[in-house]
Amino acid sequence: MVIQDFERIFQEKIDNEIKIEPKDWMPEAYRKTNIRQISQHAHSEVVGMLPEGNWISRAPSLKRKAILIAKVQDEAGHGLYLYSSAETLGTSRDEMINDLHSGKAKYSSIFNYPSLSWADMGAIGWLVDGAAILNQVMLCRTSYGPYARAMVRICKEESFHQRQGFETLLVLSKGTKEQKDMCQDAINRWWWPSLMMFGPKDSESTNSDQSMKWKIKRKTNDELRQQFVDMIAEQIKLLGMRLPDNKLQWNEERKHYDFGEINWDEFWNVVKGNGPCNKQRLAARNKAHEEGSWVRKAAKVYADKKLKHKKEKIA
Ligand code: FAQ
Image (cartoon, rainbow, N blue to C red; front, side, top):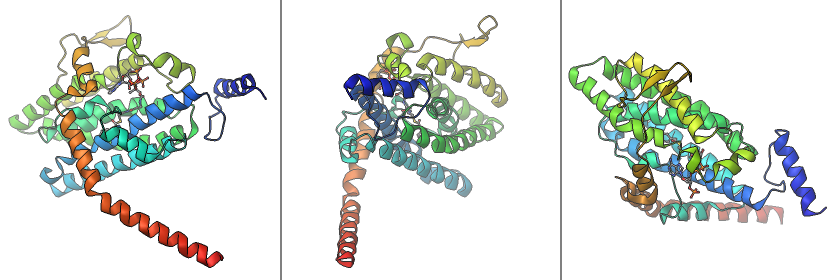
């Protein structure tokens, strides 16, 4: 077979909604963009543990603490599924982790903002997990098999995360004046960064066109962002709070909510490493990695020993 035959078979699979699997032939650019997106996604899950981890020791009750610990653990699990999925494309876990720790690899801009109050745990669950789910539901149909299958499992957990976030805010929204103010303040601070999670406008998205053609992405950044605004603009009514956007208004003609302009300078500034917590997040990841080196060494010695015993048994 010549290269054109491989390309034709690959394209036929994409056209017929047949998943691309690790041992299938694929264009190098398809492999690369999947490694890029999946590893960035994995890093986001892992770095995303930090703003929430900050509140485990200060959760207001044992029940809230147990829920938060479970949620943070889920994010670690998501990171692991995703790293494994990226590894099937020929990259190594060490390579991906090194790229994160050296600051070379990207992760979601949202995790470079500080979590300042207990209400932030509610806002992260409701808004950040809410944005993450919309994106991930579409990724359950992504064309690369191991990524799509990881997403199915992750989405089940994320929908629990979003509901717990909403419930946390609902309790605060019915509380004292201080609790209501704390709830509104958290929504004010997390709203715009949540909209940025969907990435740049379609007209400025460098990867979207090709990723849509390969069915890696099934909806564009702007389509998903609009879906998110429409969903949250309705849900906030139940909280009796408001979104910090004077331009937010139902547009009967479009059958969507109109909303104000995102501060794209702020977005790119955060993506380039200059957000409020970028340096702090990378320092925390590097420290955790260094402190965990004895665990990795011990696990390797154990694995080597087991392999040796197995070989001796066979011999
Ligand atoms: N932050 O051409 P596009 C979560 C970069 S998981 C930083 O539009 P693409 C769970 C982009 O990489 C949240 N960088 O890119 C959780 C590209 O640069 P590159 C993460 C961003 O890939 C909840 C450049 O800008 N979810 O939250 C961002 O087609 C609570 C041009 O952009 C995923 O990763 C950004 N927000 O579309 C955990 C989902 N946006 O790589 C704990 C999978 C864009 O060329 C607590 N990823 N950039 O150098 C995706 O769906 C896509 O990668 C997009 C971006 C939609 C994020």
